Image (cartoon, rainbow over all chains, first blue to last red; front, side, top):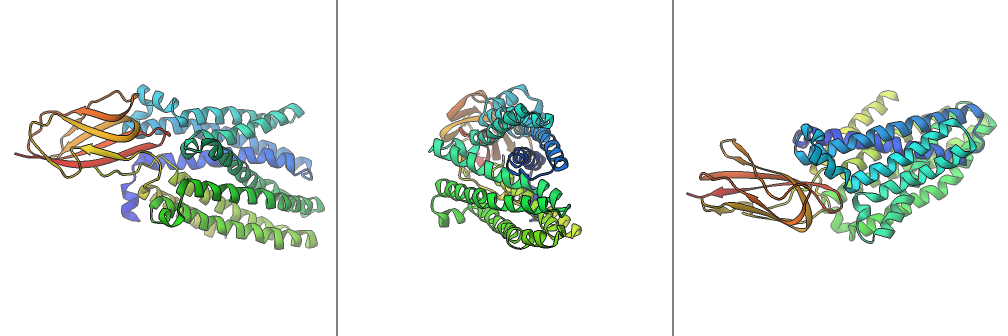
Length: 292
Length: 121
């Protein structure tokens, strides 16, 4: 692993970290809005904190999304100085990455308005969530054929993933109170998760099938191995989610003790970030080496 | 518990980085070069070609001699997507040369590659 790490260029390391941060910001912002709309039992302080988190995550998503532009330019140029090269910047801005970041910025700006807590800002924020999801369908593998189907699957995948990551904070927040409302919130999230996680897995599996074809052939390639690693971590996350739904949520309802559920949610958050890091790595600007 | 989570996060960063470094992804274009990897060419060779199965924007091509001297190889403009990229070579002394290139595939993925050739006596 040391040799592999040593071979990485600083621009690549920065790009992967920035992309991971952008994923976290964008998905958390979108997911916070989804859960504000879905978790009707959240009390006023929890809703206020969640709106604030949505806005802060949106700002972070915009900043890290914007940073990805000069970093891509730097990669194409072959050094950080390329991040300021007008020709490289223009190429990146008018590439799928540039269009995607533009749409994501628009969506996240709309999401950030949720901090104002007006009825109209809530509706605009929901439209923003859709734009954020669509922005992921404007880049990378999503622009391959069959484009319409791939785009739809990416949008569903992103919406479901956003719902998941966006649920951590309000659930953690409410579980600390140990009230009936907290138990009802966790139960409602668990019911919605059955559908959303199902959609997430279904969309992800279909995407894999469309992009990789024969799974055995794909497993022979580093790309397929990276995806397999991601799937293993996802399996662990599903295990934690199952534990929360089947054991810890009923325990919260029965005893009012939200401690175990909060600890499990913190683990879920860490595993989710790991998945985003793996995803950012194998979808990142790292280029394949071609034989001459 | 917190320490374990911190360790997990650190391991995740290292793991992600290592995956990124080793990745050879399904996207992008297949590439051939002329001179090809390992080929020996005559001293009078004046051009090199990078050939792709889909239009690529080649943003940078550099060539490094065995003694460490690096040349920038100029060809079509970086904002121009081409299937065949032709670069003008400087006058080459006999010896080994390594070529590194970077570019962007039609789906926007950044690409890079390298190959080496030898200039004969």
